[in-house]
Length: 167
Image (cartoon, rainbow, N blue to C red; front, side, top):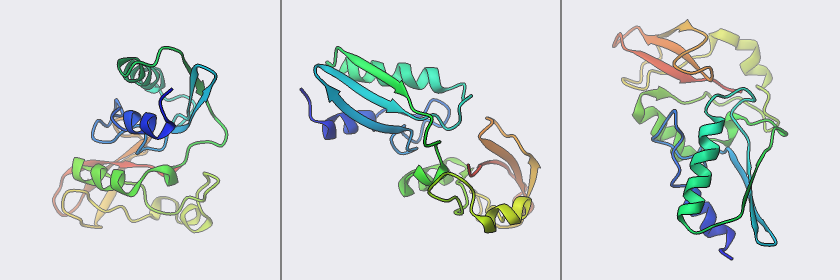
């Protein structure tokens, strides 16, 4: 049996299908890896319950583990606690920015709910442009290239970009 730490390293090689510069572990959607007898259990928490990429992520996780020689795999969908952008690692936030996606603004609580200050600010949150760093940006649409992102435009460099919404 392979040690769980090694399995975590393997899963860190699995890219998110919608944002391939970050891994599923960096996004925090892999919640647990454990052996039960000869079966490897992997708990996956989707970014939201209706995420269309969830089935693809499951397939990619299974493929990676089978490639590494794991034969018996049980993937479990874990919806509680719900995924929160707090689970995105600092390195993933940097990678998102470099890729042209504004990472989530800090302000979600550990229970996955937006903090009071962020909630009160609502659409008045300052979202920095990932290309030029300007805070002179405007929300164009509540939904961007995927439902977990909003569409923004920078008033300084005039570039459109996605913002990974807090939730």
